[in-house]
Image 1 (tube, rainbow, N blue to C red):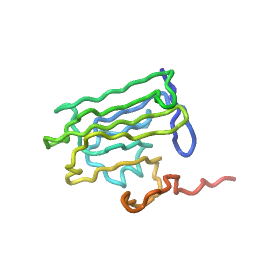
Image 2: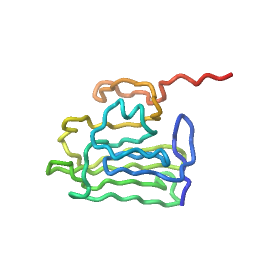
Image 3: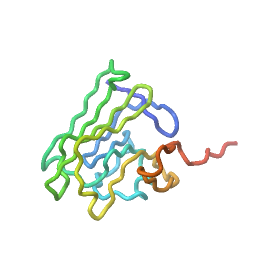
Image 4: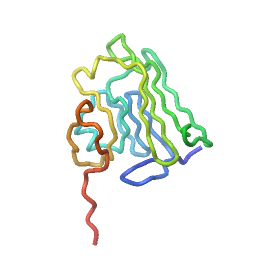
Length: 162
């Protein structure tokens, strides 16, 4: 079934396994992370490489479903790997969120959204984005209403070489 090629640490990398968390994020295995519904920016930067389409306290066991679809013949415009959270319960609320991550063979990744809960993250933020993790530098906040377009390239310096 795998590998699928994904952008990790500035290059397109073959990935054989993924950890898809009910809490709205995806980690390439074996970089496993404990399930965490109370994200912080510090955790995102320090932890594993992570795609975060909607990282917050979600509960698909209380309503909704999660799906992973793989098509080895997929390409553009139809991605070979789709991960969907469908009408997943916003933990502690009566609202739900529907969103999807599409991974393409050229390394492109799309976050797709349908009806989303307006409840925010409660005591913790909702984090949306991507991080290389591994103690990455903090790129700072971006206000999508005023700062479009913006660059999502890595802000870290190149590693030291001999």
